[in-house]
Image 1: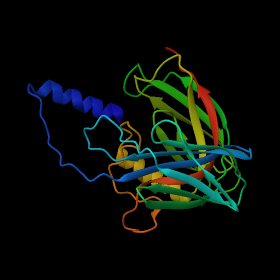
Image 2: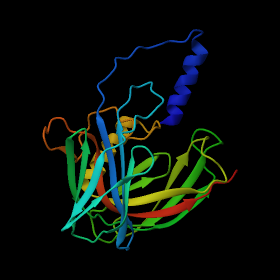
Image 3: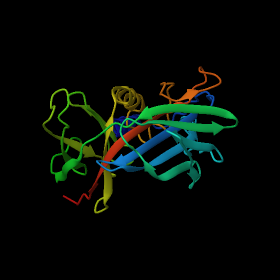
Image 4: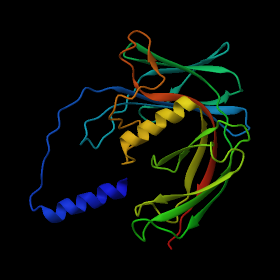
Length: 266
């Protein structure tokens, strides 16, 4: 999608001598909660990562992070408080993340309480990621050939994050219990000779569907589907006082595998 927008922009540049300014109305800011409790595949300890922002106007070049919020995680008889590191980024380390445990995220922003409850979704590991030689739009692209083996049970869903919020969603309806091989194409701006972590995580049907719609709305055009969300797509996080004033974003509890991919010049 980045490439299609880039090509369209060139056509406008060639056909117009004067810039065109389109005035868009200012929109009300919405709370965005991007929250993930994850553990490595087959491990027992995990990490909570929460990013709090507000939506920005279409032409804004900055992300309005939310600082000073109260973020906590609750499970069983345990309650743990998150610590804010970078502005708007909250985390908790060394959390026991067993199967069949219910985890409740609680976020308080300006005395408004937001909550969501989820349990662990299992994943599989990445078998390999290698660099291919094919391209789609230009010779400067990078082809990453991905291989992973699906868990044997039917009904698995997966989300892959290729870095810089380049996301891919898939389900095992056609490859249940088998190895999946596919190509992902980075654009010409992908840094060469730079180790880049690629993440594969499990997802339940609701989160998979949410991400399908969100990726479609965002158009994979950069900035991150949560931090720059431009739709009112409803996630699983509730406003406890006013259900209609729900935030954007999603809380997921997942297993995640990581593979370090380094592209080289072809």
